[in-house]
Amino acid sequence: MISALANGLSNSTLANIAQNTTASVSIETTLKSIGRPGFILIDNEISPATKKYAAAKEFLYQATCLAIYLALITPVFKKGAFALGKKIFKDAPEFAKFKGASEFLDYHNFASKSKTNRRANLIKDYAKNKFRHDGLRDELWSKDKPEKYPLIKGTVELGSLIGSVLGLAILAPQISHYTIHPMLRALGLEKKQKTEKIDTKA
Amino acid sequence: MAITDAFKKICTKLGNNNKPTYVVMAIATVKGICRPLFTMMDKKENPETKKYTAIREGLTEIIAIPVYWACGELSGKFAHLLAKPKNFMDKKLYKKYKNGFHNSKVINAYENAKELAENNLPKMNKNLMFIGVCGAALFVIPALCSVAIRPLMNQLQKRNAKKEQAKPVYNYYNQVLPKNGEYKRLSSFSNVPQYGMKVGGV
Image 1 (tube, each protein chain N blue to C red):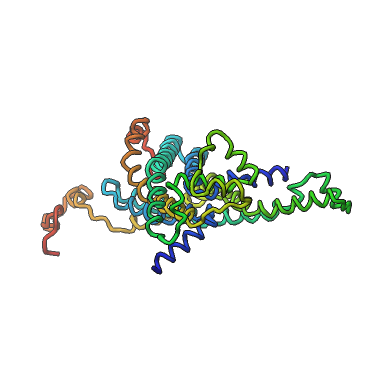
Image 2: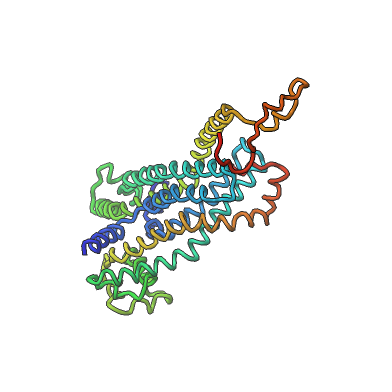
C-alpha cells in the first residue's frame, strides 16, 4: 500500500503538473467550483433557497474564472512571457533554440522523464519529427539528465503567475459581476429573491 | 542591467523550483485586496450588503493565505517519510536485507532502491505539496470559512444593530401625529424644511 503510494507520488507527469502554474491553477479552480458550493449546500444553518442561490453563485463564479483563465490568460501570458524573455535576456542564447513557449514546454516535459521513458516516447509517431533542430533531439536521446533550461521555464512560469493573478483576482471578479446575475436570472434563482426573501449576503 | 539580473535570478529560481503554493498564495493575496475593493465600488448595491460582502470576501482570503501555505508545506514534509528504499524494492528482498542476508542480489536491489528514492524525493515533495494545496482548496478552506466566517459576521451584524438602536431617530411625522389624543402646539413644529439639501441655519 505505502509502496504503491510512493510509486504513484514519484510520477513525473504529476510532478510536471504540480510545477506548471497553468495546470495547477486550472485543477484548483475546478476543485474550488466543487468544494465551495458543496460546503454551502451542506450548511444546515442557511435556508434551502439561500443555500441554492449562494451555491449556484459560487459555482458560476468559479466556472467563469476557469473559462477566463483558460481562454485568455494562459495563451496570452505564456506566449507573451517567452517573447518578452527573448527580448530582455539577450545574453541567454537558449531562448533562440525554441520556436515558442509551447515547443519549450513540450521539450521540458520530455526532459523531465526518465531516459528509458523518454526514448520510448521519442520514437512514437507523434514525436518522430519533434525537436530536430539545434541538437535538442540528441540532448533528449543521449543524456541521462538533459538540460532543462530553468531560465526559460522560470520566465514562462512567471508570465503564467502574473497572468493568473491578473486573471483570477482582477479580471474575473469584474467580468463575473456582469455575467453572474443574468445567469442566475436565467436559472430562475434571482426571481425568487422578491417573493421568498433570499439572503443574498450568504 | 541590475533589474534584468534580478529578473534573471527570480526566473531561474522559479524555473528550478516552482512550488505549487506560490501561485495560490499570490492569487489569494491580490484577491483579498481587490475583491472587497470592487465590491465597495459597486454603486448599485445596498451599502450594508456591500460592507457585509466585502468583509466576507476579505476574510475568506485572509483565511486562505496561511492555510494554503501550511497545507502545502506540511504535505511536502511527508515526502521524507515515503522516499525510503523499502518503498522502492521488492518486499521479500527488503526483508532479506533487513535480516542480514547481504548477498550481491540483495545489496544491488537495495542500492538501486536507495538511488531511486533519492531521485524521486524532489518529485514526491512537489506532488505532495500540490495535493496539499488541492486539499486546502477543496476541503480545508471552505470548511474553515463556513466555521469561522458565520460567527464573525453574526457578531458584526449584532454590533451594527446595537449601534443602530443607540442612534436617536428624528421622525418628522411623529410631530404631526396626535399624542394622547391632543395635537401639539403649532409653535412646537419646526419651520425648517425636513427634506432636500440643508442650506445654512441650525
